[in-house]
Amino acid sequence: MKFNKNSLRVQLPLFTFIRLVSSTAYRMVYPFLPAFRDGLGVSVAALSVAIGARSLVAGLVGPFFAAHADSRGRRAGMLLGMLLFVAGTGVVVIWPTFPGLIAALMLTIIGKVTFDPTVQAYLGDRVPYERRSAVLTLTELSWSGAYIVGIPMVGWVIARGGWVAPFPLLGGLVVVSGAALLLTLPKDPPRDTSRPNAWANLVGVAKNRTAMLALSFLLFGSLANEIINLSFGVWMEASFGLQLTALGAAAAVLGAAELSGEGLVALATDKLGKRKSIVIGLVVNSLVVAALPAAAGSLTLALVVLFLFYISFEFMIVSSIPLMTEVMPAARATMMAGFFSFTSFGRALASWITPTLYGWSIWASVAAVIAANLIAIRILSRLQVRK
Image 1 (cartoon, rainbow, N blue to C red):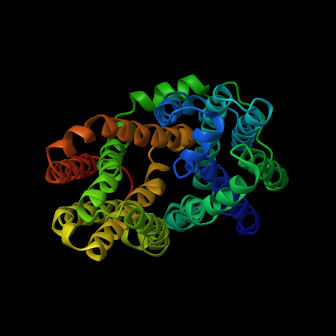
Image 2 (tube, one colour):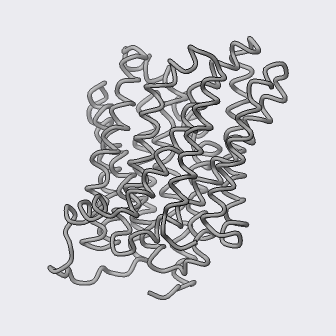
Image 3 (cartoon, rainbow, N blue to C red):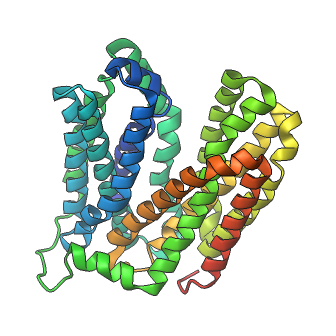
């Protein structure tokens, strides 16, 4: 398919905005956990279990829904994702209880992991591989944008309307922007009964050696990142005794690093090559994390190290998106759903091993991060796909 600049000029802002809204819904539960706890009268432990279940559901169920975009068409896949997301936001409005919140978390994340891979597949269909990093990165700005723009908005809304208030707002924003998007999207071609169905697409990815190598590399890369995600807050509190101040500064650093990493991808990845960019990100990430324990004596130095750690990870993970769109062009949406699943599995694995690692020492966590990154580089070296 041809690269239609005119239609993409309209679609890209809408893709990015809808993904910003869904990313806000995904990320808001973390900073506002106390608001949900107090509003529902449940423990943080119970909420944590619900959030963990959300990740598990996203990893296991999400690819099946996203796979429909390969068998039924990109427009149908995006519509399904938006409908699931809006249904999730509506559940809480009708049923503002803890079970209602759990249902909302499940539906909104399934909607997100249906819509996002379909968008990536749609752009993979239309944008030449040599230009794909820059275009895909524009939609990835939604992730950091959720942290920088969406989360403050949600905080303002919760302060005035309670924990339920963000849900109808976020759902309404997707309804309006989604309706505008559907007007710009070409209709899907008539369904070809000879094309593989969703289950066949999933099986095809699972049996494809290149696809599974690519997804395995993502598992280890996300595992490495999540180990530090789960460690740095406790480490900073122990190192500086400034929990609120230090963690607040670290949160700002995280948002700036994500945005900067996405900007670097837009500027450099197509020129350097996708594979080389990924390796650079992993190598820099490993070198930086090795300096983390030495930064315990200075909050400023610790924040600089964390900034470099997160920007290198963001550069690596966003650079990998255009590469993944070319692994199985015939099942792009299914493959990109696998991208989300395997990064989720990597994060889940990290949540099981990190408490033990950190219990030994911060050096154990650092060693595990470097080992996981080296395994990711090794797997990537065996991946036979375009540079």
